[in-house]
Each structure stands twice: as C-alpha cells, then as structure tokens.
Length: 285
Ligand code: AMP
Ligand code: MG
Image (cartoon, rainbow, N blue to C red; front, top):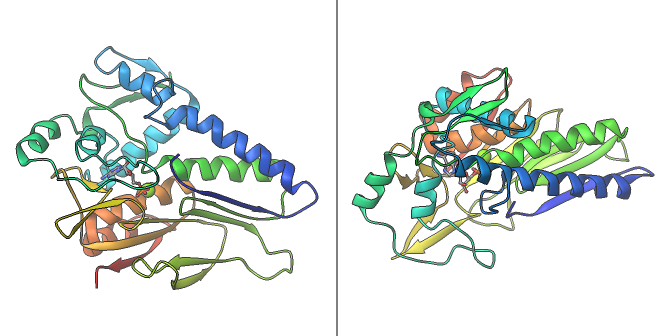
C-alpha cells in the first residue's frame, strides 16, 4: 500500500497472529492497489464504460463508504479523483515524489470532466459497480482504514487482548498494554517530524491522520501535497494535518482525507455532523 505497517501484538501467539495480519494485508493489496494491473480495482477500472461488474465484498464495502463520505462532504472526498492524481504525478519513486513542474490549468480542467462520484453506480443486492467511460477509482484515501478494520476482526477472532496496529497513520489499539495501563496514540508534529503535537488516550476507536508531510513535492519553493481538491483539481494547502477519531477505520480514513480538503471550518462542520466522530486540525501556522 505504499506505506509502513507497525504491528505490536502481545500474547503467546503474537508472532503467528502478526504473520496472519501480513497475509491479510497482502490479500487486500491485491484488491485495492490500482498501480497493480492485476488487482481487483484495476480490473474494475479497466471495465469503465462496459457495464455492471460484480465485485468482492471488500471492494464493494470500500466503494460504498467512499460514496457516502463523498456525498456527506459535497465531493471534497471523491474516489474518482484518480485521473487528476495521475496528472499531478503524485506517485512515489524510492519513497518520495520527485520534484517536477505542476500540470497546466487546461489539462487539469479537461480531466476534471472525468471526476464525479455521482456518476458511479452501485447495486448492493448484487454487489455490482458500474463506472462510466473514462472514470477511474483511486481508493488510496480509504483502503488503509478498511484494512485496519479487517486486521481488528482478525485479532478478535484469535482472542488477542492487547495490540496496537498502525497502517501508515491509521491506528487502532486493542485492550490495554500488558502492564494494564492504557495505550496512548500520538499525533505527530507536521513540521517537526521527530516531535509530538499531542497525545490521545486510546479508546475502542480508530484514529487516522491525513497530512501534507507524508507525500508531497516542491516546485519553486511551494509544497504540493498528495491530497487534491477534486472540485478544483489542485492540492489543498490550508492545513498541515487532520486527525479523525471514528468508530471504524474505514470511516476515520475517508473522513480525515475529506476534512483535510474542506479545511478548518467546513471540515469541522462535517465531523460534527457524524455521530461518534472527533478531530484535531493543525493549520500551516
Ligand atoms: P490519505 O492519506 O488517507 O489522506 O489519502 C490520500 C490519498 O487519497 C492520495 O494519495 C490519493 O491516492 C487519494 N486522494 C487524494 N485526494 C483525494 C480526495 N480529495 N478524495 C479522495 N481521495 C483522494
Ligand atoms: Mg484517508
């Protein structure tokens, strides 16, 4: 998934369960990695314009949540943003995006025609999805959170009492630490990456952070982060990070990306409209 994974699992079967988690992540990567031609999402993208496609439970669930958050955020989160992400060259090589000049406004405008979550159709009864021609899904803003939920289920099935899982900034604690104190989850300082901005006591919730410091490139002194405003086609710059605490990983992941695009006021309104959701916004200053 192009990011780091940290698994801290206590108990006699800890390392075996960790191996199962890694196998589960490898399985999910084959569903959600759109840069792998043989992945399920790539196959769905390849059938854009060709009618209804039957998909796995995993792909259906993630697309469904993506469309819900897209609607709730007025399109600030949009899983069809893929063509614009590609135009901006937001792809890492050797762990970072090489610096390059931004695309021109005409090219961005032309590709925005192909970005519109309202044109994605889903059929829950048959677990089918239909993409119009030219449309491509990028589930990078939500798939890690979904993977977190899958790992949580796996830990529960194996009776794990104490664990901490971090999938590239999508974090969930299970139970307490072995010494019976609470897990604590830190929010990293977005500009002083070795320092902590705040520490949260972990409850039975998922914590996701979207920021401009993980994936970005510089051009003529300006930072261009990997999260784009799908309505305009440009990277968003008001915030340096947003952390969202939510009942599930998939929701916290999608909402953190959405709130990052919406900014401090509209982002706060979105989070306040969702039951059981809280957030921390850190601006550029
Ligand atoms: P995250 O780190 O969860 O905030 O996700 C960022 C990733 O989501 C990017 O690398 C893109 O693949 C994708 N993405 C970028 N902008 C958006 C957006 N506005 N809506 C949905 N996905 C996005
Ligand atoms: Mg996200």
